Length: 175
Image 1 (cartoon, rainbow, N blue to C red):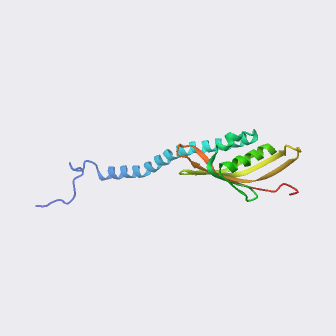
Image 2 (image 1 turned 120 degrees about the horizontal axis):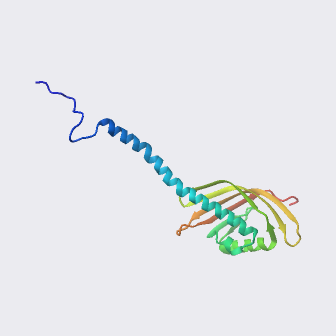
Image 3 (image 1 turned 60 degrees about the vertical axis):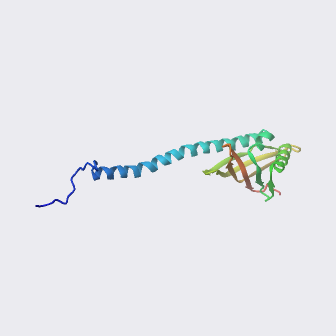
Protein backbone atom coordinates (compact mmCIF):
# COMPACT_ATOMS: atom_id res chain seq x y z
CA UNK A 1 0.00 0.00 0.00
CA UNK A 2 1.28 3.40 -0.97
CA UNK A 3 0.71 6.47 1.21
CA UNK A 4 0.77 9.88 -0.40
CA UNK A 5 2.92 12.52 1.26
CA UNK A 6 1.34 15.48 -0.49
CA UNK A 7 -1.26 17.33 1.53
CA UNK A 8 -4.64 17.70 -0.07
CA UNK A 9 -5.36 21.02 -1.83
CA UNK A 10 -7.97 21.89 0.73
CA UNK A 11 -8.22 20.54 4.18
CA UNK A 12 -11.08 21.14 6.58
CA UNK A 13 -8.61 22.58 9.04
CA UNK A 14 -7.11 25.10 6.54
CA UNK A 15 -9.81 26.04 4.04
CA UNK A 16 -7.66 28.59 2.14
CA UNK A 17 -4.92 27.77 -0.27
CA UNK A 18 -1.38 28.73 0.52
CA UNK A 19 -1.39 31.20 -2.41
CA UNK A 20 -4.43 33.04 -1.07
CA UNK A 21 -2.83 33.41 2.36
CA UNK A 22 0.39 34.74 0.84
CA UNK A 23 -1.56 37.20 -1.32
CA UNK A 24 -3.52 38.49 1.69
CA UNK A 25 -0.34 38.87 3.72
CA UNK A 26 1.42 40.78 0.93
CA UNK A 27 -1.62 43.03 0.47
CA UNK A 28 -1.65 43.79 4.21
CA UNK A 29 2.07 44.58 4.27
CA UNK A 30 1.66 47.05 1.39
CA UNK A 31 -1.69 48.58 2.36
CA UNK A 32 -1.34 49.13 6.11
CA UNK A 33 1.68 51.48 5.92
CA UNK A 34 0.00 53.48 3.14
CA UNK A 35 -3.16 53.89 5.21
CA UNK A 36 -1.10 54.82 8.27
CA UNK A 37 0.78 57.54 6.33
CA UNK A 38 -2.53 58.99 5.14
CA UNK A 39 -3.98 58.94 8.65
CA UNK A 40 -0.90 60.73 10.04
CA UNK A 41 -0.59 63.18 7.13
CA UNK A 42 -4.09 64.63 7.56
CA UNK A 43 -3.59 65.83 11.17
CA UNK A 44 -0.07 67.03 10.37
CA UNK A 45 -1.36 69.05 7.39
CA UNK A 46 -3.99 70.59 9.65
CA UNK A 47 -1.31 71.49 12.21
CA UNK A 48 0.86 73.11 9.53
CA UNK A 49 -2.07 75.25 8.41
CA UNK A 50 -2.69 76.27 12.03
CA UNK A 51 0.96 77.22 12.53
CA UNK A 52 1.03 79.24 9.30
CA UNK A 53 -2.06 81.12 10.48
CA UNK A 54 -0.37 81.84 13.81
CA UNK A 55 2.67 83.23 11.96
CA UNK A 56 0.50 85.49 9.80
CA UNK A 57 -1.57 86.66 12.79
CA UNK A 58 1.65 87.45 14.68
CA UNK A 59 2.89 89.61 11.79
CA UNK A 60 -0.51 91.35 11.55
CA UNK A 61 -0.57 92.05 15.28
CA UNK A 62 2.96 93.50 15.16
CA UNK A 63 2.12 95.75 12.21
CA UNK A 64 -1.14 96.94 13.80
CA UNK A 65 0.42 97.23 17.28
CA UNK A 66 -1.87 94.77 19.06
CA UNK A 67 0.09 94.17 22.26
CA UNK A 68 -2.22 91.78 24.13
CA UNK A 69 -2.95 89.52 21.14
CA UNK A 70 0.74 89.24 20.22
CA UNK A 71 1.68 88.32 23.80
CA UNK A 72 -0.87 85.47 23.78
CA UNK A 73 1.20 83.71 21.11
CA UNK A 74 4.02 83.19 23.64
CA UNK A 75 4.23 80.57 26.39
CA UNK A 76 4.86 82.06 29.86
CA UNK A 77 8.46 80.78 29.77
CA UNK A 78 9.15 81.83 26.17
CA UNK A 79 12.52 83.23 25.12
CA UNK A 80 13.11 85.85 22.41
CA UNK A 81 16.67 86.00 21.07
CA UNK A 82 17.50 89.36 19.48
CA UNK A 83 19.93 89.71 16.56
CA UNK A 84 22.35 91.25 19.07
CA UNK A 85 22.34 88.03 21.06
CA UNK A 86 20.33 89.54 23.91
CA UNK A 87 18.12 86.93 25.55
CA UNK A 88 14.68 88.16 26.62
CA UNK A 89 12.88 85.57 28.74
CA UNK A 90 9.43 85.36 30.28
CA UNK A 91 6.11 87.12 29.93
CA UNK A 92 7.07 90.35 31.74
CA UNK A 93 10.23 90.85 29.68
CA UNK A 94 8.38 90.12 26.43
CA UNK A 95 5.67 92.62 27.37
CA UNK A 96 8.34 95.31 27.91
CA UNK A 97 10.07 94.42 24.63
CA UNK A 98 6.89 94.65 22.55
CA UNK A 99 5.68 97.80 24.32
CA UNK A 100 8.98 99.46 23.46
CA UNK A 101 8.94 98.24 19.85
CA UNK A 102 5.34 99.34 19.29
CA UNK A 103 5.88 102.75 20.90
CA UNK A 104 9.08 103.42 18.96
CA UNK A 105 8.55 102.00 15.47
CA UNK A 106 6.06 101.33 12.70
CA UNK A 107 6.82 98.09 10.86
CA UNK A 108 6.05 96.61 7.46
CA UNK A 109 7.55 93.22 8.37
CA UNK A 110 7.11 90.32 5.95
CA UNK A 111 8.09 86.74 6.71
CA UNK A 112 8.90 84.18 4.02
CA UNK A 113 8.70 80.72 5.57
CA UNK A 114 11.03 78.14 4.08
CA UNK A 115 10.53 75.23 6.51
CA UNK A 116 7.51 74.53 8.64
CA UNK A 117 7.59 71.13 10.32
CA UNK A 118 6.18 69.31 13.32
CA UNK A 119 7.33 66.42 15.43
CA UNK A 120 5.09 65.38 18.29
CA UNK A 121 4.40 68.37 20.52
CA UNK A 122 7.10 70.56 18.97
CA UNK A 123 7.14 72.45 15.69
CA UNK A 124 9.33 75.02 14.03
CA UNK A 125 8.97 77.67 11.37
CA UNK A 126 12.17 78.87 9.73
CA UNK A 127 12.61 81.41 6.98
CA UNK A 128 13.66 84.88 5.96
CA UNK A 129 12.30 88.30 6.79
CA UNK A 130 12.36 91.76 5.27
CA UNK A 131 11.37 94.86 7.14
CA UNK A 132 11.43 98.58 6.89
CA UNK A 133 10.79 100.20 10.22
CA UNK A 134 9.93 103.83 10.58
CA UNK A 135 11.13 105.60 13.71
CA UNK A 136 7.99 107.33 14.99
CA UNK A 137 9.87 110.27 16.59
CA UNK A 138 11.89 111.21 13.50
CA UNK A 139 10.29 109.50 10.50
CA UNK A 140 13.64 107.88 9.68
CA UNK A 141 13.38 104.58 7.83
CA UNK A 142 15.59 101.61 8.57
CA UNK A 143 15.59 98.59 6.28
CA UNK A 144 16.77 95.18 7.42
CA UNK A 145 16.60 91.60 6.32
CA UNK A 146 17.68 88.30 7.76
CA UNK A 147 16.47 84.96 9.03
CA UNK A 148 14.14 83.83 11.76
CA UNK A 149 13.17 80.66 13.54
CA UNK A 150 10.12 80.20 15.71
CA UNK A 151 9.79 77.10 17.86
CA UNK A 152 6.30 76.15 19.01
CA UNK A 153 5.14 73.73 21.70
CA UNK A 154 1.68 72.18 21.78
CA UNK A 155 -0.05 73.10 25.03
CA UNK A 156 -2.15 70.67 27.11
CA UNK A 157 -5.32 72.23 25.64
CA UNK A 158 -4.08 71.46 22.09
CA UNK A 159 -3.15 75.03 21.14
CA UNK A 160 0.34 76.00 19.99
CA UNK A 161 2.49 78.67 21.62
CA UNK A 162 5.90 80.11 20.84
CA UNK A 163 8.61 78.91 23.22
CA UNK A 164 11.70 80.18 21.36
CA UNK A 165 11.87 83.02 18.85
CA UNK A 166 15.15 83.91 17.17
CA UNK A 167 16.06 86.73 14.75
CA UNK A 168 19.28 87.14 12.84
CA UNK A 169 19.82 89.98 10.46
CA UNK A 170 21.97 92.46 8.71
CA UNK A 171 22.77 95.59 10.66
CA UNK A 172 21.19 98.75 9.27
CA UNK A 173 23.62 100.97 7.34
CA UNK A 174 25.71 103.25 9.54
CA UNK A 175 25.49 101.15 12.70
